[in-house]
Image (cartoon, rainbow, N blue to C red; front, side, top):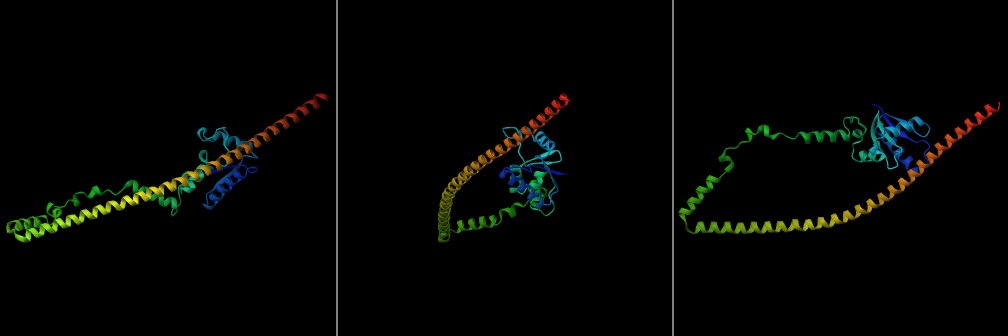
Length: 250
């Protein structure tokens, strides 16, 4: 399988150049075999790229910009999807390649496989059955002691009941204190979440503005490419017309 990266070697857009360098540099760092296909100097490469990018993946104007990445004839994605895969340590899955042993992506795949299969504890269900006597523990002994205490009566039984009531009161106080502590922690967590949400919103607005600037720059680059193509076609037509007139004159 050959990874194809469609690039524009003569692009005047700084943003496009940066994206192309990022993709190529990362593939070289991973030692992934790939082929660069120039759409600026090769009209066939440009037409093939435009025709094979899925319609739902094309921008609003219908003309995809480089870099675009393919695995043979299969479409992998553009720079944005490549960047997301890089952040998630899933570049090999993005490229449709098996991750090499020992890589982070391979370790994540192994963990996901283990979680998916789970631990089948039901297989040893029969072995986990515990006799009723063992499950109840010393319940029978406590019942016998309680019966003896009732029969004997006296101060000993009353003292035990008083101790049990005191122990129950202390346990209730501890549970109440335990409930108050999580409530305070929850309030602090809510405050921290609000702060994080504000920071995230501000960051999202900045990224959106950068994306709009980048889109404008890419549209300008595309417009320049289209104008260059039209100028070349017009020049060729004028040359053909001059040759035809010269032949007619002769």
